[in-house]
Image (cartoon, rainbow, N blue to C red; front, side):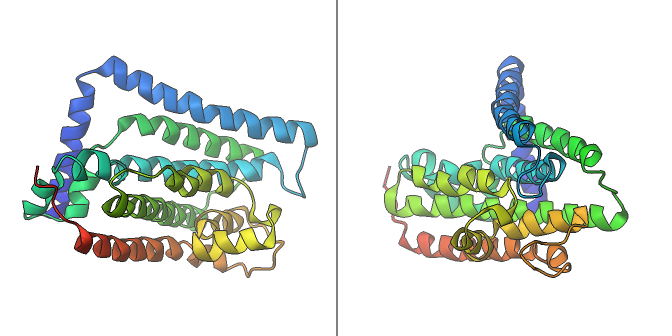
Length: 267
């Protein structure tokens, strides 16, 4: 069986297992939808109070919010296996079984626990994108759709890379560290707002260290047809999502270093 059919088979088995308890799956999905909905209310309250924030309207910020939450929802569903690597695989010795199978290790982890509840955040992100379309009068041409899809793919790669790094830490700590949430959930929070609102040092972090701006801010400017107040050329938003794939490749490089350190628990 090829890698891709195997992945879909693993995902199907995971989804099928969750579908045995439809009420639970529905409530978890609804919880994700409503939980992230509190963030939407907070953003709305901010702009309802001040109208605009440094020249940015609610429709434009809604585009950032929608894009970032769609990216993260899909990456979070795919990367659950890396998130629980320490507790469910390394500590129990189940990781050895994965190593013995003649299939890509990362693929097995990605298909291990595909959480359909994450679709609650995805649906909410899509809903906010629809709101942004009308509020900011976005013209969805083939070019802007292509930029949005490329940004989405780059963002999924970036957040998946963060989850891979989180899993890699477990080779040293066994436990999953909460500090990794600074990059995942904290990254989502930071990327929901325009880069121009942050201090210079934080802009550099979001551009060159954890390139969230490259998958959200610059592509959103290209979609909106808005000039970057920080002075970046217009073409940057078209190519910047590549940074997400570079980050993922670097994360897997660190992952391979962690694998070399792994020693079986013997259980």
